[in-house]
Amino acid sequence: MAAPMKSMGSSFNATSFQKKTRSKLISIPGTRPSVQNGQLIVSTGVTSLDYLIGGGLAVGTVLLIEEDRYNSYSQMVLKYFMAEGVLCGHELFLASAQDHPDDILTELPAPILDDIASHSPMEGRMQLGGPHASQDAMKIAWRYQNLPKVQTALASSSRFGHYYDVSKKMEPEIRQAANCHAFYLPEHSTESSAPRSPLLESYSALLRSIQEVIRKGGFDGAAPPAKSRNVLRIGLPSLGSPLWGDDLCCRDNPAHGHALTTFLYGLRAVLRSSLSVAVLTIPSHLIQSGLSV
Image (cartoon, rainbow, N blue to C red):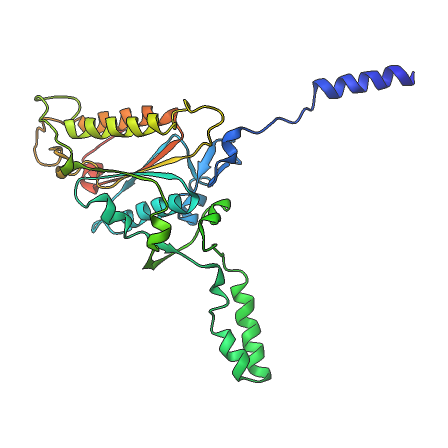
């Protein structure tokens, strides 16, 4: 009886309870599988926002952010998103119709350093005071030990999500290490589209540029297996503003009323099957006017 039972157990273990191998995409720096559905996610650069949206931003999706009145908080979220890409070693694509993408990148926030505790006031107190000063220093040290720490170099891509100091700018040496693709609308010659065209030429040129970067960079899954994979982070600030040639907010009967919606549908289709993720900021008047995607 012992031999048959051993044979059955061996066969049972070989056909069931086999540990599934994880997808190779999980090994991409700055990404991890969602605990909810296993989908590959990246950090937005704002840990509290990651928590609200289920752990992070899913690769292959688009996040739309309604711009606030003075377009300050929405732009800061976009800069967090791009700064997180720099620290994780992701490639960047930044498009703008107003400020040049290079100027936007110079405004990225600086990551918080690992040695935050070593630069704390407790060092001086421990050297100058007696027993009471030592007790105060221990209380400060206890508070500092629970603070999140961020590494100082690009090797910090091993962690998921970082913290930033908005009062400081990212060091040029760190920022310039990232591979960034820029799309500045005034530098792209666009022809006026025919009346009632479903897609403006400015949006069409932007979509073509994104598709080209995805294809040439191997973000569409066409890269050979031996090539290391990466994620493309796409930032599109103030999309839909009149600077893009969109007259949605300028006329009662706009000639391109569905141009932005058509572009968003096209962008979502392009990203769905790629290792890309996009964050867009939309002027609030477009949201209030009933824009739906």
